[in-house]
Length: 246
Image: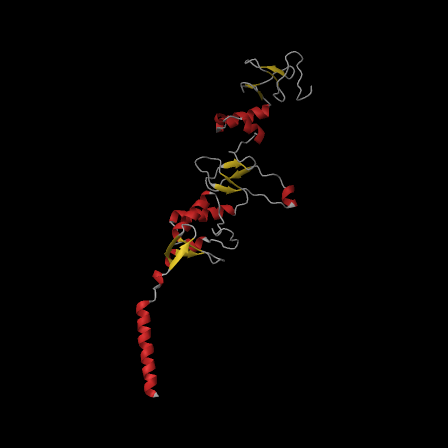
């Protein structure tokens, strides 16, 4: 009986050797997987996992997919598998897999997405990304509206209401009427003086005029007739302003 057992063990040993020679075990680097994006089979080590789902895609396709999403200003990127609602891509999982510029764009996009109301510094040589403050509490609503604010990057003042360079002495509406070539420091000082003196501008040629005496009817040297109070066009015949209704 012992001889029969030894003979059976020898047969099983030789069978195992034959099986290993015919179907050798594949190394982990030789395992293949199928990518549903490029529709190609590639080594398994070239695939990346996605959090919260079982889908896998090759690194090349995922890199292009993430870059395309960033071009669409997307910050929170989900699994590219159609119909998947649980898979989420996290930047730290791709930190050493993506090109450095793509990873930095992704992180910047996520940071910007957390800013509730964003705008950029109005000074062209700065253009830093800023966050508009303001809460919804009743106490904050009762406080005085913030007008001048300072950029933390270039330390220059800008208007917190219209997000333009600070226009002391002029309200936002008056400032918006100024041309791009009329918003320099010296120009703003002139318009501040004009606001104090209640000077008016011709609605046609935009020249500044001052009334010495008489009614509100003004006739500019360009021929335009307008109201000195609101700058609305007036009739030369009856000197009546439909805006002021007088």
